Length: 348
Image (spheres, rainbow, N blue to C red):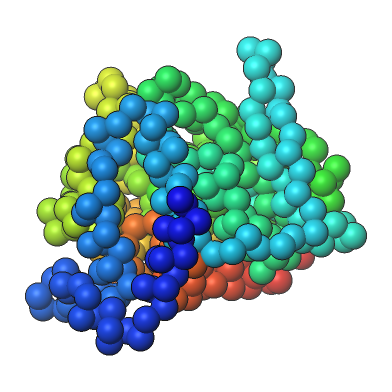
């Protein structure tokens, strides 16, 4: 059934753009009306899908996985993939997946990746194809972390897992062919929160900070809903009610939402000073847009070099829509090019 749905979606989304425009009602702001027609079609389809916040967490995870398979590209071939388990002090394990498009080479840059999904849904499989492409196009080792999810594992479980994963990678990256002097972090949505929180903790604990952070449509303020929630909180794939469900699952105690590792936009310039060069990609029709834009400003005020990209016609989650939405593919390539530029300019 999933295969049939994917085939139908590919057929519909491959129609000429002016045909797609006749199938959907433009849902952009009246004064700009910039929403990509393919995104508008995806938004209209999403309105008829079951609401994940009304499902059990397990059912929501299956639903999310299946929807992402429909919108993703065909499986991207890559030379080497390896699943490993990181031991933890509690005698449990953190699963990771290592991607290497150039296993014959050594001393490669390494990107530690944290998937999105509101710290409630998502796993190694939902972002597998993106990690394959990132390893290939950036000529880097990519290590994806399958951190624990809420509500079964609320704060600080995910934060602790990615921190342990970072320590493990710092100590063992040479075994994968990577350079310990070129470890970057990347995350989308809630994964971006984990990525930048990791950088803040590394700085605070006075251990080497990742050399670069890439934050895609980041979730950075769990304390309040910004103006872009009012503009785009309904009808653009990621909804206000879904975000509230995510936050309640991981941060049931409102006091924890005030912590700067859960709401980095609250951090003052002194805390942000010394963070690594940063890429922030935000979507024009995303309730989280203002959080990314605000954080970019705060980082710049702290003297951090920031590449901020606004993709005005896209919606939240665009790196998982590249199979059916051409503009999403362009945004993904923009990220990869930024990483290539950074690593090329850095002596490893």
